[in-house]
Image (cartoon, rainbow, N blue to C red; front, top):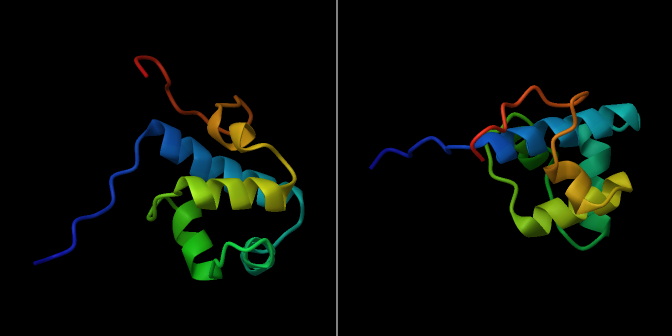
Length: 93
């Protein structure tokens, strides 16, 4: 049975963009951010982070909390649309 592609909705797409944006603003590589998450007790490979940022992998709530903590923001920051980070259309959500 072939694998179905992961479908990511508008909130997931925004979250993926926000993670990448904040990582770059903080001058972190994917490897460094993944290592921070691992040090916080949420093992994460840089390949998993790359797939999350490209919206090829879902960001579950445990990943979200670890990534937010590692980036020094609240999980809400990664979820709510910010005009400077996301061009997502949130009408109807």
